[in-house]
Image (cartoon, rainbow, N blue to C red):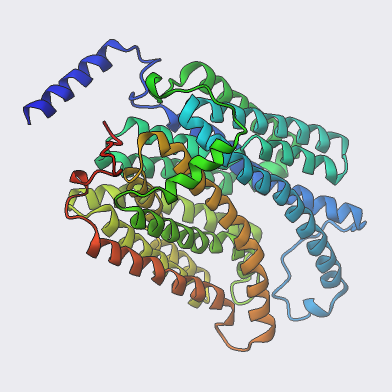
Length: 482
């Protein structure tokens, strides 16, 4: 006890002698990064999709400007407008899929190398690389929109952003940064705050992007995207202190076989609690997949009967959902901490609310019921930060970047696979099956999949050590938080 208090006082004395600019444990560090970077990339998603949709209309020489949502009109499916819209949707979907592939697949590959590299060289390096790539992408796309360049230019721009690591790399670097600078007991709340900031950014974008594009055009939006990425780059380079201790830094190449070996060793290395680490990884994948299904299918689900939503209502619903998750993530984790509920218990609670949210959406027949489903999903963002926090406690300090590289890559991969799996499944259910709630079957399936992490978390709680702090994460008794 005396030793612990003396260590705490020594740490506080050391922090008091460090300037604000060089103190990685100050109040605001990577919170600024996630606000600027996520604002840029979330703002880009609807803008890119709408621009590619308009590009498909231009190439098919669709001259009418009336794009009212008439999908619920009984005569719509037999009209010429329906056949034209089908062609536009098909072409636009192909464009969006190609650009998404050019962005996502290289990012998953690159983030694995940059994650391991961050364990040797520091967390700022990957953030700088990803910020430069995103800024270049925004600049190239801005030029492409202005000069109406062909699709391959957009794919090249997205490929550059992907090769620089894009969102997975920034996420892994920020998560490792938090693991470097926080105690295990407060780590879930810090990660939950980062999650909340990302959701708030998404809320603002969903409410404002449509009006912004309509009034000011695509070029003005991309000017803002380029500006926030440049501001983020300046902040990371000049104002963000490095969190990796100097004694842990090593000279190593970015692209090396050792990087992949480091990632493999995180899950293959014989350590106490390795089965817990792998089990939590499975839980994370299922939660990611089920969490993405709403945003993947909402446009298709909302525009059809009986909801018959306009695009503005879809934006309001997504904005409300993201804001609810932002508040619920922080409130839920803090509430569980005050009540003495462990991260595992908080995860099960969050998964239960996510199941309720998906089931309610599947059964919803009107707008009121859909927005009530948002209330049921209030704590549905709690599982992700809790799972990440528990996984970070099971690995060594030099393995945090490699650990979060896998998690960030899987998050992006699950987002991509959600579109490949659930879009065709949803289309098949509404065309081949009959019944009042067939459109909700895909949501019910995902709710059923979430029973897997519920059960696995229960197994972990039943078999884990009574006091995980007393259980060294490595067999050579290295302490990851010392």
